[in-house]
Every structure is written in structure tokens, then in C-alpha cells.
Length: 358
Ligand code: ADP
Ligand code: MG
Image: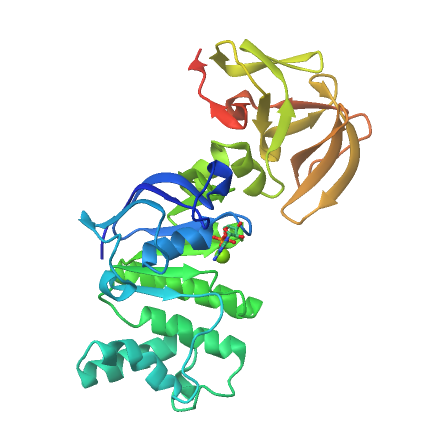
């Protein structure tokens, strides 16, 4: 297992990149702590696979270095980096049995046959295929083949890191949950450094200790699920994480006051003069629907989602979402909203502004 350092890393698929837009991965400096479980989260095309393939050695970066425990491996092959990687679609040897597929990485490294037999049995159990170990892989469903790929990725205990690139895409929804739980227990048991790529926030937030959020080739925030929820550093993190996402509202901010279309509200922190696109961000969980005080809204729709209600309203022509408790009565005269000042963030050109504690 190893700490992985990305030093000034960037990648363009063009031979002569002209500007930032030509980079699929914008410059990045980061340490992946040894033994942590990370999720790499972002929409399709934001650069997740590019970054993962650079870490595994499948792709050579156009700029920067990768270090494992301080040793430069930028030019080392995948095999020499001692990494296991599982891809979106199954990679199995059709003519081999399930057992031999699982045993392959261990045999390759000359492991003891007795150990191989035990370990393969154990992995077979984890992926729910113990009964099929002696079947040939040919003819199995895509779902079953992907479980074999996952199992083969997990079979070695001595790898520097385990990398997963949207590995559950072809797995049926019920088994997805099961396998994700298995991966998590595997992490607890062996403490491998794990990097798990996904575009699904639920998958990321339930799997990882730390979530790395990417947007348009850039890492916009690295944090615990709680940090991403409470303090999104970029408006994209606010939108992308949470359901519904953070409300982002154009505002003028001066000192401790924010002005939204002529209506003012008091902030928890003070801000110096701000230049650029200024917005306030507040999660639906920290907005209250009231009567009498606050910003004026028109309620459009109330959705009951079980544990709570989501109120969709209109605030000066833009949608605002409010989370209300299951038992709150939404009466027609509720036409104002208030925000919990502690949970109102200020953004300038999409990045959070610190402000000063008042
Ligand atoms: P993700 O895994 O987040 O969906 P990728 O890392 O695959 O994103 O892609 C990031 C960007 O790089 C996309 O714009 C994609 O079209 C581009 N890209 C990916 N692979 C190649 C390639 N082999 N050649 C050229 N462009 C590529
Ligand atoms: Mg990808």
C-alpha cells in the first residue's frame, strides 16, 4: 500500500495543446493518503477516467509526476506500479473457469497453491459466485462476468492501490448495493488505498471516506461527505451533491448584508467589497417556509418524498427548493422564506468566499 502523490499533473490528448481548454485534466497537486477510500465523482466527460488511467500507468501524462511513497513512478508500467484496476466492462478469460480467472493474478505472481485455493474460495464467496467456481466464464451473463472482474481486482492483498472505474455499471441494482458493501468491508479488512470512480453521488457518499469532486477537467473540492454538504467550495459541488442541490441565488453582498432583488438579509459573516459574479448558496435543508417575514416566494408544488417534503417555489422568477418536515402543514398564506444564516455561503465567480467571523 502506498501514499500516491500527484505533482503538477495535467493531461491533454492533443499533441500541442494551445490553452487550458485543450486539457482533459487541468493542473492538479494532491496527495492520496495511504489506506484511505476515495471516490472520484463528476459527470460524464469531466476527466475521471483520464485521471485514474494516469495513476494506474495506462496513460502517460503530458505534464507532471506521479509518486508512490515518494518514488517517482511516472514512467513505470502498470505492472511495476503494483496496482489492481477494474473497468466499467468485464475483462475475463472466456475459456477459463471462474476459479482460474480469479486465481490468475495470484498464479502470475507465483503465490503458494494452498493459499491461492483458500483465497479464491473466499473471493468467490464475496462476489456471490462460490457455487459457480468450476463453470467456464464463456456463456455467463455480463453481470456475472463483471463480478469476476471485480473479484480478480480484489484477489491480491499486496497491491499498492485498488482502482475502480464505474465498476457497477452493468450490475443489476440489487447486487450493486451488495457489492458496494463488500468493497467497503474489504477496505476495512485490508486497508488498501482505494479510488472508486463514479458519476453517482449516492455511490460516492456511501463508499468513500473522502470524495474528490471533478468538474470540467478540474478537481473542485476534496472532502468528507459532510464537508461537501455543509460547505461546498464551488457552486457545482452545491448543485451536484444533495437532492435537490443547493439553491444558488444572485445577490449583492456588502459587509454582513446580502441584497436579493431589493430584499435584504443578514449574513453570519462579514465580506469585503466583492468583484465579479456574486451569489449566495443555501441548501434546501436550511430554508424555512414562513408567513410574514423573509423573502417573498410563490409555492408551485409540494412533493412528498417520504421522510420529508420538497417544496418547489418561485423566488423573483427563479426556482427555489425548500425541504420541510413530513408533518409541516404548508398553508396557502406561507409566502416567505428565511435562511439559516450559519448555512448561507457566499460565492464569487462560483468559488466560495471566506468572509470574516463577525
Ligand atoms: P470521464 O471518465 O469523467 O467520463 P474522460 O476522462 O473519459 O471522462 O474524458 C475526459 C475528456 O477527455 C472528455 O472530453 C473526453 O472526450 C476526452 N477524451 C477521453 N479519452 C480521449 C482520447 N483517447 N482521445 C481524445 N480525447 C479523449
Ligand atoms: Mg470514464
